[in-house]
Length: 189
Image (cartoon, rainbow, N blue to C red; front, top):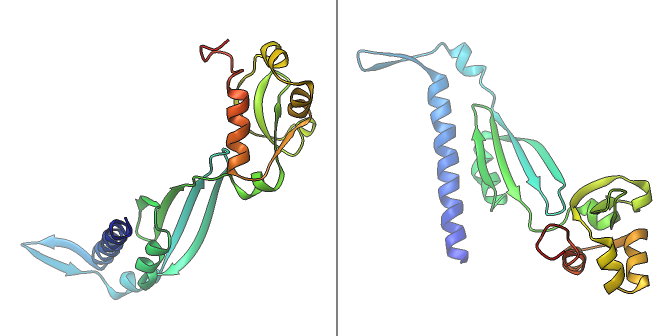
């Protein structure tokens, strides 16, 4: 498995170097005439930036999306791609590279202050803070509250209405699993 990632990283670095080289050549040379490439003026070649803007877009399981933007020297592009192992190259432009990564975890802010609860319209919802504060992070599905109240203890129902704290992926998945059986429209009404 490790070898496959090394091969993938090597190919990604070669692709990025090829893109960077192709962009460099494209920016250095003008029109092609009679099979010859004509060099652009040194002014336009010198105007090309010596750095790349790298945008790393991430999405987390809890619905949070983030972007990190950084400037890196062109000669460090391969190392940057290796450092962002598992990211996809979404777009490559002359001075900008956009990478995308789907994180198999919940976002740090969800770990810090995430609470599951029921929204006013009966949806299982992840909130940033307590449900009464109503800052929605992600909405999942409508809950059959009558069925839930009939099958679960009063304490479990009260804790969901008050807000169930989630600190990690295991707790997040546990809440989804526990209340998934009360989902309306999943053939289990």
